[in-house]
Image 1: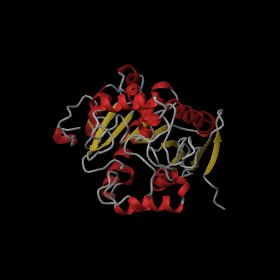
Image 2 (image 1 turned 90 degrees about the horizontal axis):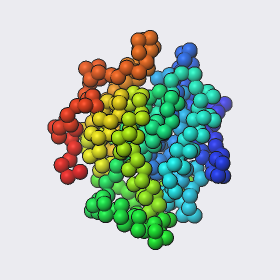
Image 3 (image 1 turned 120 degrees about the horizontal axis):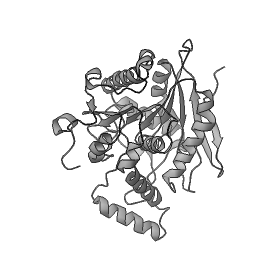
Image 4 (image 1 turned 60 degrees about the vertical axis):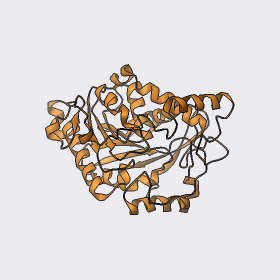
Length: 344
Protein backbone atom coordinates (compact mmCIF):
# COMPACT_ATOMS: atom_id res chain seq x y z
CA UNK A 1 0.00 0.00 0.00
CA UNK A 2 1.37 3.41 -1.04
CA UNK A 3 1.57 5.86 1.83
CA UNK A 4 -0.14 9.22 1.24
CA UNK A 5 2.65 11.87 1.00
CA UNK A 6 0.48 14.72 2.31
CA UNK A 7 -0.56 15.76 5.79
CA UNK A 8 -1.39 19.01 7.59
CA UNK A 9 0.82 21.04 9.89
CA UNK A 10 -1.05 23.13 12.47
CA UNK A 11 0.37 26.56 13.29
CA UNK A 12 0.13 28.51 16.53
CA UNK A 13 -2.43 30.92 15.03
CA UNK A 14 -4.75 28.09 13.94
CA UNK A 15 -3.83 27.75 10.26
CA UNK A 16 -3.57 24.36 8.55
CA UNK A 17 -0.56 24.14 6.22
CA UNK A 18 -0.45 21.18 3.87
CA UNK A 19 3.00 19.61 3.75
CA UNK A 20 4.37 16.69 1.76
CA UNK A 21 7.22 14.21 2.12
CA UNK A 22 8.58 11.86 -0.55
CA UNK A 23 11.40 9.46 0.41
CA UNK A 24 14.32 8.78 -1.89
CA UNK A 25 14.02 6.16 -4.61
CA UNK A 26 17.66 5.22 -3.98
CA UNK A 27 17.40 3.77 -0.44
CA UNK A 28 20.67 1.80 -0.70
CA UNK A 29 22.64 5.01 -0.21
CA UNK A 30 23.93 5.44 3.32
CA UNK A 31 23.36 9.18 3.40
CA UNK A 32 20.43 10.76 1.60
CA UNK A 33 20.36 14.46 0.87
CA UNK A 34 17.21 16.43 1.73
CA UNK A 35 15.63 18.90 -0.70
CA UNK A 36 13.00 21.40 0.46
CA UNK A 37 10.97 22.42 -2.58
CA UNK A 38 9.48 25.92 -2.29
CA UNK A 39 6.80 26.64 -4.86
CA UNK A 40 5.79 29.94 -6.43
CA UNK A 41 2.67 32.03 -5.93
CA UNK A 42 -0.60 30.32 -6.88
CA UNK A 43 1.09 26.91 -7.13
CA UNK A 44 0.42 23.63 -5.34
CA UNK A 45 2.48 20.51 -4.69
CA UNK A 46 0.85 18.31 -7.35
CA UNK A 47 2.19 20.67 -10.01
CA UNK A 48 5.73 19.55 -9.15
CA UNK A 49 5.25 15.78 -9.40
CA UNK A 50 7.71 15.49 -12.28
CA UNK A 51 10.37 17.51 -10.45
CA UNK A 52 9.86 15.55 -7.24
CA UNK A 53 10.28 12.22 -9.03
CA UNK A 54 13.52 13.38 -10.64
CA UNK A 55 14.84 14.56 -7.27
CA UNK A 56 13.98 11.23 -5.65
CA UNK A 57 15.72 9.30 -8.42
CA UNK A 58 18.85 11.33 -7.61
CA UNK A 59 18.88 9.98 -4.07
CA UNK A 60 17.05 12.86 -2.37
CA UNK A 61 14.35 12.93 0.24
CA UNK A 62 11.95 15.73 -0.70
CA UNK A 63 9.83 17.99 1.49
CA UNK A 64 7.39 20.63 0.25
CA UNK A 65 4.47 22.72 1.44
CA UNK A 66 1.53 24.64 0.04
CA UNK A 67 2.10 28.22 1.16
CA UNK A 68 -0.53 29.67 3.44
CA UNK A 69 -3.31 31.09 1.25
CA UNK A 70 -2.88 28.68 -1.67
CA UNK A 71 -3.08 25.02 -2.62
CA UNK A 72 -4.95 23.12 0.07
CA UNK A 73 -3.51 25.15 2.95
CA UNK A 74 -5.75 27.55 4.88
CA UNK A 75 -6.93 30.43 2.71
CA UNK A 76 -6.77 33.92 4.13
CA UNK A 77 -10.05 35.38 2.86
CA UNK A 78 -13.64 34.27 2.28
CA UNK A 79 -13.11 34.52 -1.48
CA UNK A 80 -10.66 31.65 -1.91
CA UNK A 81 -9.57 32.96 -5.30
CA UNK A 82 -7.81 35.92 -3.69
CA UNK A 83 -4.07 35.60 -3.14
CA UNK A 84 -3.52 37.42 0.15
CA UNK A 85 -1.00 37.67 2.98
CA UNK A 86 -0.46 40.11 5.83
CA UNK A 87 3.34 39.92 5.75
CA UNK A 88 5.99 37.68 4.22
CA UNK A 89 7.12 37.06 7.79
CA UNK A 90 4.06 34.82 8.08
CA UNK A 91 5.26 32.68 5.17
CA UNK A 92 8.68 32.48 6.82
CA UNK A 93 7.22 31.41 10.16
CA UNK A 94 5.38 28.57 8.45
CA UNK A 95 8.56 27.52 6.62
CA UNK A 96 10.59 27.62 9.83
CA UNK A 97 8.03 25.42 11.57
CA UNK A 98 8.21 22.90 8.71
CA UNK A 99 12.01 22.79 8.91
CA UNK A 100 12.37 22.60 12.68
CA UNK A 101 9.46 20.27 13.45
CA UNK A 102 9.47 17.97 10.42
CA UNK A 103 12.56 18.25 8.21
CA UNK A 104 15.43 18.41 10.70
CA UNK A 105 14.35 15.40 12.80
CA UNK A 106 14.52 13.21 9.65
CA UNK A 107 17.49 14.85 7.90
CA UNK A 108 20.64 12.71 7.78
CA UNK A 109 22.77 14.68 5.37
CA UNK A 110 22.88 18.07 3.65
CA UNK A 111 19.66 20.04 3.41
CA UNK A 112 19.17 22.24 0.34
CA UNK A 113 16.42 24.68 -0.68
CA UNK A 114 15.06 24.51 -4.23
CA UNK A 115 12.91 27.59 -4.75
CA UNK A 116 10.81 28.66 -7.74
CA UNK A 117 9.68 32.30 -8.19
CA UNK A 118 8.13 33.46 -4.89
CA UNK A 119 9.65 30.35 -3.33
CA UNK A 120 13.09 31.53 -4.46
CA UNK A 121 12.43 34.92 -2.89
CA UNK A 122 11.42 33.32 0.40
CA UNK A 123 14.49 31.07 0.24
CA UNK A 124 16.70 34.17 0.20
CA UNK A 125 14.75 35.62 3.12
CA UNK A 126 15.06 32.43 5.14
CA UNK A 127 18.77 31.94 4.46
CA UNK A 128 19.54 35.51 5.52
CA UNK A 129 17.58 35.29 8.76
CA UNK A 130 18.45 31.71 9.79
CA UNK A 131 22.17 30.98 9.68
CA UNK A 132 23.74 27.51 9.86
CA UNK A 133 20.39 25.78 9.32
CA UNK A 134 20.69 24.85 5.64
CA UNK A 135 23.61 23.99 3.38
CA UNK A 136 22.80 25.46 -0.03
CA UNK A 137 20.13 26.62 -2.45
CA UNK A 138 19.10 26.45 -6.09
CA UNK A 139 16.90 29.43 -6.99
CA UNK A 140 14.89 29.19 -10.21
CA UNK A 141 13.37 32.41 -11.64
CA UNK A 142 13.42 33.83 -8.09
CA UNK A 143 11.17 36.80 -7.44
CA UNK A 144 13.87 39.39 -6.80
CA UNK A 145 11.52 42.09 -8.08
CA UNK A 146 8.27 42.21 -10.04
CA UNK A 147 7.15 43.98 -13.19
CA UNK A 148 4.33 46.47 -12.77
CA UNK A 149 3.12 46.76 -16.35
CA UNK A 150 2.02 50.19 -17.52
CA UNK A 151 2.50 51.65 -14.03
CA UNK A 152 5.96 52.95 -13.12
CA UNK A 153 7.18 51.07 -10.07
CA UNK A 154 7.19 54.07 -7.77
CA UNK A 155 3.57 54.81 -8.76
CA UNK A 156 2.49 51.18 -8.25
CA UNK A 157 4.02 51.23 -4.77
CA UNK A 158 2.35 54.53 -3.92
CA UNK A 159 -1.09 53.46 -5.18
CA UNK A 160 -0.83 50.15 -3.34
CA UNK A 161 0.09 51.92 -0.11
CA UNK A 162 -2.82 54.35 -0.51
CA UNK A 163 -5.28 51.53 -1.26
CA UNK A 164 -4.25 49.71 1.93
CA UNK A 165 -4.61 52.89 3.99
CA UNK A 166 -8.05 53.44 2.48
CA UNK A 167 -9.26 50.03 3.61
CA UNK A 168 -8.88 48.09 0.36
CA UNK A 169 -6.19 45.69 1.62
CA UNK A 170 -8.45 42.68 0.90
CA UNK A 171 -9.49 43.86 -2.58
CA UNK A 172 -7.90 42.70 -5.83
CA UNK A 173 -5.26 45.08 -7.07
CA UNK A 174 -5.57 46.69 -10.49
CA UNK A 175 -6.15 44.20 -13.29
CA UNK A 176 -6.58 41.15 -11.02
CA UNK A 177 -9.60 38.92 -10.45
CA UNK A 178 -10.88 35.37 -10.01
CA UNK A 179 -9.21 32.71 -12.13
CA UNK A 180 -10.81 30.25 -14.54
CA UNK A 181 -8.28 27.83 -16.09
CA UNK A 182 -10.48 27.44 -19.18
CA UNK A 183 -10.11 31.13 -20.00
CA UNK A 184 -6.30 31.06 -20.17
CA UNK A 185 -5.07 30.02 -23.65
CA UNK A 186 -1.64 28.50 -24.22
CA UNK A 187 -0.85 30.96 -26.99
CA UNK A 188 0.77 34.08 -25.60
CA UNK A 189 1.25 32.70 -22.08
CA UNK A 190 4.19 34.00 -20.03
CA UNK A 191 4.95 30.72 -18.26
CA UNK A 192 6.24 28.04 -20.64
CA UNK A 193 6.86 27.01 -24.24
CA UNK A 194 5.77 23.45 -23.48
CA UNK A 195 2.17 22.80 -24.48
CA UNK A 196 1.91 19.39 -22.80
CA UNK A 197 3.07 20.61 -19.38
CA UNK A 198 0.94 23.73 -19.66
CA UNK A 199 -2.25 21.74 -20.19
CA UNK A 200 -1.31 19.13 -17.59
CA UNK A 201 -1.17 21.99 -15.05
CA UNK A 202 -4.51 23.33 -16.27
CA UNK A 203 -6.12 19.89 -16.04
CA UNK A 204 -4.99 19.49 -12.42
CA UNK A 205 -6.88 22.67 -11.58
CA UNK A 206 -9.99 21.65 -13.51
CA UNK A 207 -10.11 18.30 -11.71
CA UNK A 208 -9.38 19.87 -8.30
CA UNK A 209 -11.06 23.31 -8.08
CA UNK A 210 -9.84 23.69 -4.50
CA UNK A 211 -6.33 24.14 -5.85
CA UNK A 212 -7.23 27.16 -7.97
CA UNK A 213 -5.99 30.61 -6.94
CA UNK A 214 -6.68 33.91 -8.66
CA UNK A 215 -4.95 37.27 -8.60
CA UNK A 216 -3.34 39.10 -5.72
CA UNK A 217 -4.86 41.63 -3.35
CA UNK A 218 -3.51 45.04 -2.46
CA UNK A 219 -2.44 43.49 0.83
CA UNK A 220 -0.43 40.79 -0.92
CA UNK A 221 1.14 43.34 -3.26
CA UNK A 222 2.02 45.68 -0.40
CA UNK A 223 3.66 42.82 1.52
CA UNK A 224 5.52 41.83 -1.65
CA UNK A 225 6.92 45.31 -2.20
CA UNK A 226 8.06 45.44 1.43
CA UNK A 227 9.78 42.06 1.21
CA UNK A 228 11.50 42.92 -2.08
CA UNK A 229 12.87 46.08 -0.50
CA UNK A 230 14.37 43.93 2.25
CA UNK A 231 16.16 41.41 0.04
CA UNK A 232 17.75 44.20 -2.01
CA UNK A 233 19.68 45.46 1.03
CA UNK A 234 23.38 44.69 0.69
CA UNK A 235 23.79 43.77 4.34
CA UNK A 236 20.83 41.38 4.11
CA UNK A 237 22.32 39.54 1.12
CA UNK A 238 25.81 39.33 2.58
CA UNK A 239 24.40 37.36 5.53
CA UNK A 240 24.00 34.41 3.15
CA UNK A 241 27.28 32.52 3.08
CA UNK A 242 26.40 29.18 1.50
CA UNK A 243 26.63 28.01 -2.14
CA UNK A 244 23.78 29.23 -4.33
CA UNK A 245 22.97 28.48 -7.96
CA UNK A 246 20.81 31.26 -9.42
CA UNK A 247 18.92 30.40 -12.63
CA UNK A 248 16.95 33.07 -14.49
CA UNK A 249 14.70 33.04 -17.56
CA UNK A 250 15.78 35.08 -20.57
CA UNK A 251 12.17 35.51 -21.79
CA UNK A 252 10.95 36.70 -18.40
CA UNK A 253 7.70 38.70 -18.35
CA UNK A 254 6.77 38.44 -14.67
CA UNK A 255 9.96 38.96 -12.68
CA UNK A 256 11.94 42.17 -13.13
CA UNK A 257 15.50 40.92 -13.64
CA UNK A 258 17.11 44.35 -13.54
CA UNK A 259 18.05 43.64 -9.92
CA UNK A 260 19.83 40.41 -10.89
CA UNK A 261 23.34 41.86 -11.12
CA UNK A 262 22.96 43.60 -7.74
CA UNK A 263 21.68 40.41 -6.10
CA UNK A 264 24.36 38.02 -7.31
CA UNK A 265 27.22 40.45 -6.76
CA UNK A 266 26.28 40.70 -3.10
CA UNK A 267 25.77 36.99 -2.43
CA UNK A 268 29.21 35.79 -1.30
CA UNK A 269 28.95 32.32 -2.87
CA UNK A 270 26.70 32.58 -5.89
CA UNK A 271 26.78 31.53 -9.54
CA UNK A 272 24.21 32.69 -12.07
CA UNK A 273 23.03 31.34 -15.38
CA UNK A 274 20.47 32.75 -17.80
CA UNK A 275 18.37 30.33 -19.86
CA UNK A 276 17.93 32.64 -22.81
CA UNK A 277 14.98 30.84 -24.42
CA UNK A 278 13.07 29.96 -21.24
CA UNK A 279 9.95 31.60 -19.89
CA UNK A 280 9.22 32.17 -16.22
CA UNK A 281 8.36 28.63 -15.09
CA UNK A 282 11.56 26.82 -15.99
CA UNK A 283 10.29 23.70 -14.17
CA UNK A 284 7.47 23.47 -16.76
CA UNK A 285 9.60 24.21 -19.80
CA UNK A 286 10.49 22.05 -22.80
CA UNK A 287 12.48 18.83 -22.48
CA UNK A 288 15.52 20.56 -23.98
CA UNK A 289 15.52 23.29 -21.33
CA UNK A 290 14.83 20.84 -18.51
CA UNK A 291 17.69 18.63 -19.70
CA UNK A 292 20.00 21.62 -19.37
CA UNK A 293 18.54 22.42 -15.95
CA UNK A 294 19.28 18.93 -14.63
CA UNK A 295 22.80 19.04 -16.07
CA UNK A 296 23.48 22.31 -14.27
CA UNK A 297 21.74 21.17 -11.08
CA UNK A 298 23.70 17.92 -10.94
CA UNK A 299 27.02 19.68 -11.53
CA UNK A 300 26.29 22.25 -8.81
CA UNK A 301 25.34 19.56 -6.29
CA UNK A 302 28.31 17.33 -7.09
CA UNK A 303 30.85 20.16 -6.95
CA UNK A 304 29.57 21.64 -3.71
CA UNK A 305 28.08 18.66 -1.86
CA UNK A 306 29.39 15.54 -3.56
CA UNK A 307 31.08 12.69 -1.73
CA UNK A 308 34.63 13.59 -2.78
CA UNK A 309 34.12 17.33 -2.49
CA UNK A 310 33.31 17.04 1.21
CA UNK A 311 36.77 15.69 1.96
CA UNK A 312 38.36 18.72 0.31
CA UNK A 313 36.17 21.71 1.12
CA UNK A 314 32.45 21.42 1.79
CA UNK A 315 31.66 24.98 0.74
CA UNK A 316 33.93 25.53 -2.31
CA UNK A 317 32.38 27.71 -5.02
CA UNK A 318 32.10 26.23 -8.49
CA UNK A 319 34.44 27.72 -11.05
CA UNK A 320 32.83 28.75 -14.34
CA UNK A 321 34.94 26.25 -16.30
CA UNK A 322 33.34 23.43 -14.31
CA UNK A 323 29.74 24.34 -15.12
CA UNK A 324 28.96 25.19 -18.72
CA UNK A 325 27.36 28.58 -19.24
CA UNK A 326 27.50 29.68 -15.62
CA UNK A 327 29.04 33.03 -14.72
CA UNK A 328 30.74 34.01 -11.49
CA UNK A 329 28.98 36.65 -9.43
CA UNK A 330 31.52 39.30 -10.51
CA UNK A 331 31.03 38.65 -14.22
CA UNK A 332 30.04 41.43 -16.61
CA UNK A 333 26.38 41.13 -17.58
CA UNK A 334 26.17 42.00 -21.25
CA UNK A 335 23.01 41.93 -23.32
CA UNK A 336 24.32 39.21 -25.62
CA UNK A 337 24.88 36.77 -22.73
CA UNK A 338 21.82 37.30 -20.57
CA UNK A 339 19.11 38.41 -23.01
CA UNK A 340 18.01 41.24 -20.70
CA UNK A 341 15.56 43.50 -22.47
CA UNK A 342 16.63 47.16 -22.58
CA UNK A 343 13.16 48.29 -21.48
CA UNK A 344 13.12 46.17 -18.30
